[in-house]
Amino acid sequence: MLYKFKILLTDPSKNLWIQPTLGAIFAIIFSLLAVLGNYFIPVDYVLNITAETLSSLLNIIASSMLAVTTFSLSIMVSALTSTSNSATPRARPLIIENDYTRIAIASFISAFIYSVIAKIALGFEYYGVQGRFVLFISTILVLLYLIYTLIRWVQTISSLGSLSDALLKIEKKAAEGMLQYRLQPDLGASHSLPQQLSEYKILSEKIGYLCHVNLAHLQNLAEKYQCHIHICERPGTFVESQQLLLMLYPQKPFDLDAEALEKLWSDLRDCVVIDQNRSYSQDPRFGLQIMSEVGQRAMSASINDPTTAIQAIHAITRIILIEPSKDKKLELCEYPLLSIISLDLQDLIKPIFAPISRDSTANLEISMWLIRSLKIISRHAKEAELKESAIDEEKKVFQRSLSGLSFEPDREALRASFEQ
Image 1 (cartoon, rainbow, N blue to C red):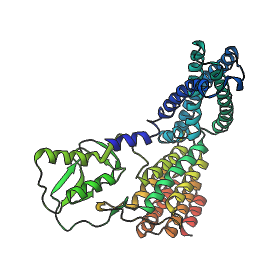
Image 2: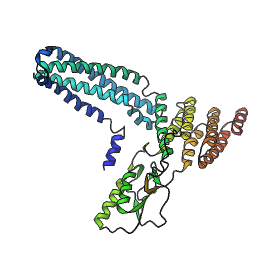
Image 3: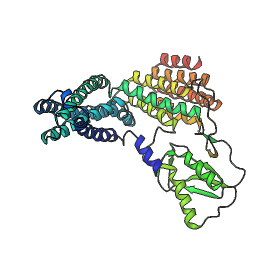
Image 4: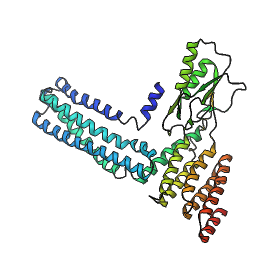
């Protein structure tokens, strides 16, 4: 349960409320703590700031921050809509994830709450002379911070929601997932299965995407019950009800009563999170498929933007061939009592390039770039399976594109590109 809550906190589409909530709590505490000045600062050492002066400053902050917050939220909604229309709806969480956007909105809401609470406390004569002086200094600091945040926010909204911004965010997220795969191809589990038949099997109770696997807790359970656990599906797989998820290989049959056994099954199922939507976490394929969607959409009749499709192809090539820096070591087996089904490397090629190729058979430039990118992958990929898949898909792209071109010089140019 805690693992699912942790996932919820890291999901940008579901945790947008956290920063404003924390900011609001901090603003309330910050505005009320000014009264401590009455106890720690001698009255002779402070200026006598009138309540009217403070009230004017707080009025400015309250009125302006309410408007700025409303404007910022409308900008964010527009950016999300623009990203969905120009790139893909699957890129929306990456826009929500933007740190500057989240900090700016949380800051504006917090400043509004700070000014309202401080103004109410001021009306009740909550602050003395020293308290008003501390509140005045605090308000000046808040104003300076808001000026800085507004300037940075202006820079952020200049590109927020644009297609180029979406492409950069998708590539960055996809590259992170691929790097993690390069470092831990099996998510830190082992490769080998015990040489025995599985006595216990855990089946799915839901239909949806396998989004996360809590390997750390599975390892703890395997140690506690002295068994090996095999994960039968990779994160990102669409599973159906009663589909096999886990297989247990105990060193000896479990000596547990019905209640304890049911608790173990429940704990094991809690380690496998199934949701309606896929997640970038633990799934290197998802980011590539999102980038492929951008390329497909760019070639639709309503958009017809070949340059964006070419940019998507370039990004896909970079993501597939990305390698971790030399100072990062390959982590093969962090969980020795766990094993997981290997990733089919063909899933990094065929489902990614084939849809773009199908949507651009009549476009010579796109077809040539697809062929060239697949050649680059086949030359530079370290895995033999990935090389073979790229070569096979290159042939299919050539045949598919050749059938879609009617102008003979275009067909000859495509042949020349393929035979290079």
